[in-house]
Length: 445
Image (tube, rainbow, N blue to C red):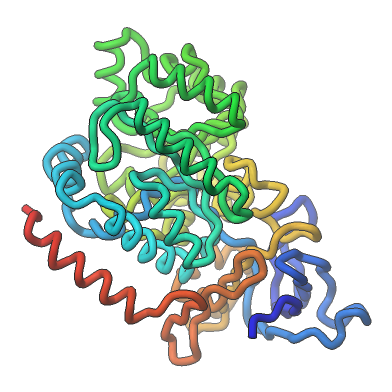
């Protein structure tokens, strides 16, 4: 039986709102998927005294993580082509494999594996961009997650669509079919300035305004991308997209590694958002994004994993820690990106970027109960002087014990350490992964 009313009693509650950063010995009351009250553990209101209690006596309870940039079904390509820079990685390895294998089953199965990995690491929402979005949605619905689905658009043909017009048509049909689903939201996802024409961007801008959808794209990921734009268009990619009307409050720009100070001011002025993907940027040797400078300029920055083919983990704990450490080195200042700000990037900043800040991203009365419990009494976590510091610099996804989305417990780490998903069987996931590994090995170089 699924409990619709329950109380989570925690050692620490980390609200991520404008109030106290840490609430000690507090309880969060959940009813019908929504947070109804946040009170001291000793002050449970009379109307909830008989509700079931989940005891998280040695845990921090925090909002679910939001993965602001992902290609979820690429989980099937995890470790497929390592130690290669972005452009040869795409042209020589990834695009040929996708041409042969990407299909509805590929996207569904890869997305289901990704959902399981994300839930076990406390990610409750992800912002996706890939082919066959309906198959991703089917996996998301089965897993029970919250997702922001990118309706991918390219100029060149794929197994999914032949022309930019067809990509747009198929994407809008998917959005129309699922727009009433409470756990789903949508944006157009033109892949990148170097794969989408001016005319297509203009069409997307018009449609996004008509349908009230955002835009999710890659931008300034590599120096080669910028050099190509200067040669072809005479301007840097950001300036080109700005002139086409594609940069605004509904725009999420992935990577932003090579942004200059005046461009950060432009993003701030336009209200656009950055999805910082430090591990992928490092692994593909793309560079270190100026995140501290972006935050100082007033740009809203969230965290993304990118796809598992270029990371190779869907692990926002690693992204938080890496982002904080990289900022300190690149800015030559230990306070460049403090722990609380890194945690905000993984939670509330991501919600703002997706327009979901009224629903998720913080633990507040009236918001949806997308929550994560993290056990902080393991030996590697002791002593604990500051739970926020520990969450960023010490803890890892293996310490996540519970993940709720909309008040439903979707993941639980059992006492023996084994994962248990409410809506997915672990052995089925193992079987899916092994079946695809056998297929993909025939094309791996």
